[in-house]
Image 1 (cartoon, rainbow, N blue to C red):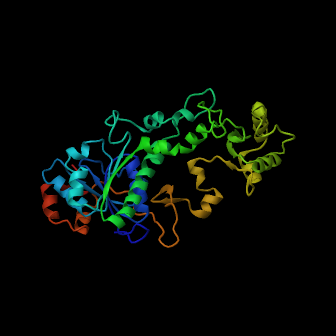
Image 2: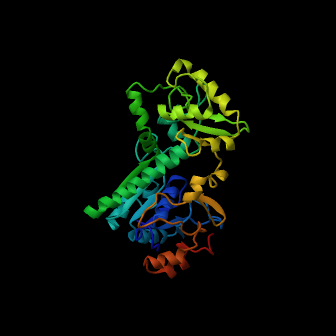
Length: 380
């Protein structure tokens, strides 16, 4: 069991899934929780998701085996948190739904992660990040004027609206449990979380400061002082000079001669053209040196491979290489109980015996011999 981080001593059972739940489990592991991923039989030897899968141990439980569900329930009985990523009703059909688990372990934090939520006419439909952010209005707002909506990878829905809100639910419930002694069920959905992330836009829209059109608002590339500009070498710089004094610094460092006023919308096309022409005069590296240490709010746009070498990220160790893989370091940072990157992502079933013995589940040999529990040498 990990002996570091603010969550040291917390036991988490993660039912294997995709995207949001594994990332939440990774964060819990980074914070010191003892996270056990429950994989299904028949998975390949190579561990899935080499970064998202870090920091935990893996067991393989065969829920089709008569003793499989009981073996998993015995593990859940000893857990503080269960992360369940299935469509509504699946866990109940498997015999590991909230009613059964909480009746056996009343202090359990039962975290359910779905796209659409546990109820509603679309709750049992399949979907992916792009679908979930589409119906919340978030995807509609991302893109340039006159162009189509632009999916922001799967960062906004899966990981922003999904993982982070599941994590908030788990941590809040653990805190509440300290007072009540009781667990509860968390219904975390990507649509709910994504909608919450748009709170700022709903507020400024209600105040008449946002238009339901892409690329015409101050923060969606509508404003020329909040946009990206190509450099002489075909690279790009990001500009976020919103406040007047930051805009003034931008103008000074670009050596713009009498540019249009910052907030004169009628002259925004003229201002954009002036900024674009200025940035095209030098390379990204040259502009990076010009703006380094200033308040112009300008930064180079780096690739994932380049990001680790940025001086600010390098000084903090924001990105590290572990097991030959570049990956983010644990965040946030703690003064007394720092997080840590745990072991590399395990192969399915690599710790079946170890975990069940560590957690005090009796009859491990019988479970292995009967096929309810599989170890890493017998995944079929």
